Length: 183
Length: 156
Image 1 (cartoon, one colour):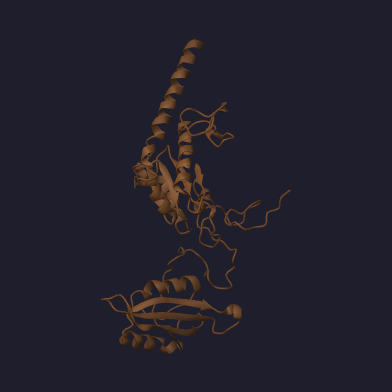
Image 2: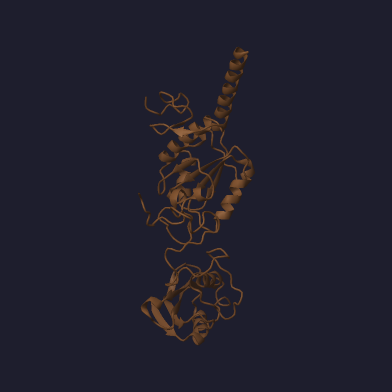
C-alpha cells in the first residue's frame, strides 16, 4: 500500500514538473505599458535582446488570453482601477511583473497622482527595479520568474541565498534555470 | 517674445486680434498661483501664441504672451472658438488650479479622476496629501502609510 502511494506521488510530482516546464516556456504576456519603461520593454522584445527565445515572444493584448501581466511604466491613481480590472479579468494561473521603479515603489514620483507601488493594488510576483531597467536586467528577472513558475502554483515559495526561487531548500542551483546560476 | 498684460474682460478681444494677425497656434494656456507671494488677484492666466507657416513649418512672427490676473470667479471667456486646442488646456487649468471659464459651466477634469477633491497645483494644497482611488487607506491604524514614500516612521 505504501509502495503504491509512493508511486502515485512520483507521478504527481513529475506531472507538476511537466506542467511547470510547459507554463514557463510558453508565457503569453499582457504588456500593460504606460510610460518610458515601454522603450526598454520594446528593446527587450526586439531582435537584439530577444525575449522570444524564452518562449515569451507573443504578447496577447487581451487579458482573457494572457497569463503574465507585465505592468510597465507609471500607474496613476486614475489608472489604478483599470489595472485592477485587467488583473481580475485574467484567468489563473497568472503572474504579475512590476517593471521599472514606478511600478515597484512609485519611482521618483512621490506626489498626488502616482500609485506608490502597484503591489498596493495587485499581488506582484517579480520586481524589476531600474529607471528604466536595462534589457539584460529584464532578462535576468524573467529567468527568475521562470524558476518561480517552474515550482508550480501550490505550496510555499522562498528565495535562496543566490536569489533563485525554489520550494525546498536544496543544496545547489537547479538544472532548469537556464544554467546561469553560479555553481 | 512680447508680453501683454491685459484686463480679464479684454482678453478675448486681444486673442481675437492676434488670431487675425496670423497667430494660428496656441502654444500654451496655463495659470500661476501667486498666493504664496500674497498677491491679489490670486491667479495669473497665461496664453502663449505663435504664428506658424503651414508650408515651411517655421514661425514667421515673434511669439506673444498674454497675461491677465483673475481670481477664482468665472470672468474669462473660453478661447475654444479661436483655437480648439484651448479645450484641453482649459480643462487642465480648471483641474489643477480651479480657474473657471465663463462659458464653460460644466467643465470636466482632465488629469485627475472625477472624484478627486481639490485642485492639486494650488499653493494651499498640502504637498503630502494623497487621495487614492483604490488601494490602501490613507490613515492606517498603526504603522506605515503605503501611499507616500517620505514619511516619519518610528522604529523600536
